[in-house]
Length: 115
Length: 114
Image 1 (cartoon, each protein chain N blue to C red):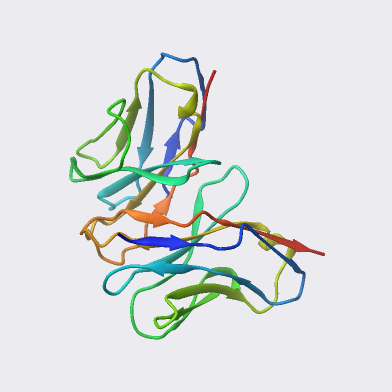
Image 2: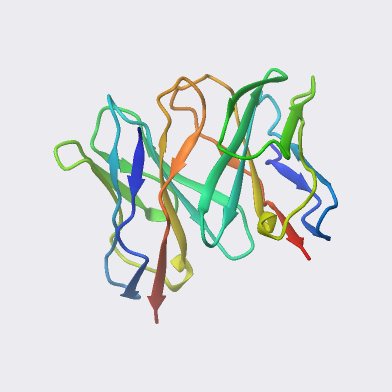
């Protein structure tokens, strides 16, 4: 099976712009989660989608949003970019057995740099 | 609230020696615990997980982890380190709120010297 794929791998944006990141989960996986990784804050949970519904949300401002499509692919959007949004954005997928021991598999990430 | 702690920012070990990367957790109830490894400019790779049962869990690349309920620990171990094991290691616990959210530790950088 193909793994989790994320596009694009690298992005450079300027402050005030918006950006959309894409994630395609492993085939058959219905749950997609997003995490932000920065040197200062480490790995922080953004949100989780299952069957096109947001099931959980982390403590991020409303500028961060996401959605999931019927084929389980997910996008996240960040509007009005700030310098502090520079980070590695990781997507993970699993079958979606909520709260169970199912393993999350991660994609390679999208490196966002905000200038 | 659930949490995970990795007390060491960096662990240095000589190639061929055993290695241990420490992790302690704080959860209510029975935890689901995970170890992931991250190589430079890459995502996280799953190593192993503890669900229930045998306290010694074996995973990928010769790694294993020991679950200790009384000490609330889940330390990652390998009998003989390789230079290629040098990477960033993360311990994580599944949030018990009925979702798939993982709560990560701060990470431990493992450096294996030839």
